[in-house]
Image (cartoon, rainbow, N blue to C red; front, top):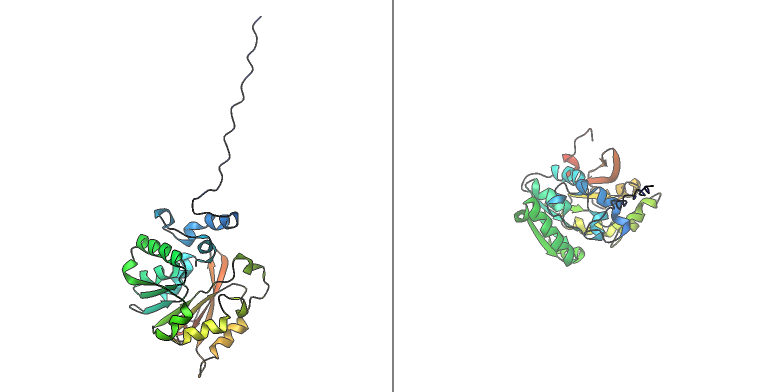
Length: 237
């Protein structure tokens, strides 16, 4: 009598897990899923640190900001991080001074600018924006100060004192010493009354327009345009 051989069960293949050498903590895994929205050329070798994953401006929004700058404008990117906004301004035929206090993050931004082929249009500066601002002049000051990490979204009403590294009023005043033409990217839950108050810091008050920024129908932030940048914004925005 022949014994029946027991069928060996096939070893189960391990489930595919989301891995990337760039991911250093589970809290940024969801941002990795959005990597091509953050940088369309991500697969070409774009590099980010942990803070860069949740603080970089999504590329479609950064491109929108850059589209409102006139050709050959000198843009001061005051908190440039890993270079998302600086790259888009440079891609729109602007010259950019990109300021970042973290030297390692500047290395990442230089790498990313090289991938987009715009490194010749960006001067990267390692330094404290508040110390450098009194000595700078430009056509546009771009502000995307840190929002305090992913927890910002849990706040019902985000206020200017929650911005980093200083109160939003202080950040805005430092930018005003450079130029009255300011673009400021803020959280989607921002207190808009406080943003309006910023325009009154100048005499006469600065022209101000705001728009909601979406990526794939999801609101990612609010942009406030001051001075001539507000005039460049279409009326139907």
